[in-house]
Image 1 (cartoon, rainbow, N blue to C red):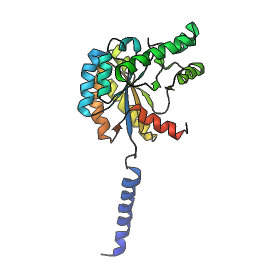
Image 2 (spheres, rainbow, N blue to C red; image 1 turned 135 degrees about the horizontal axis):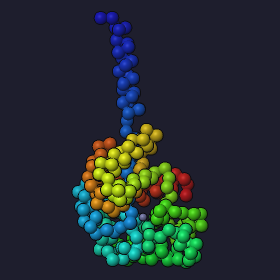
Image 3 (cartoon, rainbow, N blue to C red; image 1 turned 45 degrees about the vertical axis):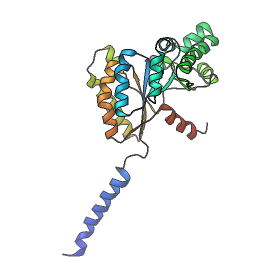
Image 4 (cartoon, protein in one colour; image 1 turned 90 degrees about the horizontal axis):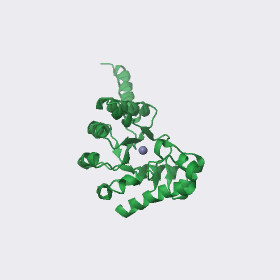
Length: 239
Ligand SMILES: [Zn+2]
């Protein structure tokens, strides 16, 4: 057979190889951070913590101080399991409203009391604060930073899973699973491969994670703590 006839075939092979190596290759850093707000909730954690442990997945918990003060043992268990515990204020406070109503000292107290509970239970000092309801103003942000925190604002890495809405409306677990998968696939098309997912300590969320954790693993994602992603983004921004 004429050798020339092989040329298009070779080109096709090369093109396929190029596609495999350059285009279809997984991103070098595919990271998922599972974060859970509003805990600690004993009835959810008794299922969630074993699930995370079974899959070897670390998580980041944004806890409410006034709830955590009654469940320091749960904070200890989370910490012993390699999870990190961060600040979500003392009374799930809208920090802007608190500032307007009671001044900066009240905001500092809400943050400081919660940090004290975490430190007391785990020996660790929290370093991130997610303001409840995502309400944050420049003044509130400065107060949070002055207390030694990175103030979290909704941005590129974040996904609000809306699990609380699904739970409130008694939607089937598939709704939450499909929404998260859909958002991930949209973001991947935009070349975003770092996702910080905001969940809540809800029974529905535990059910969804039984499907979502294997889903992420199959896609090649690594589960990491928030601090790992934040350290990288702080280093990248030169701060
Ligand atoms: Zn919250």
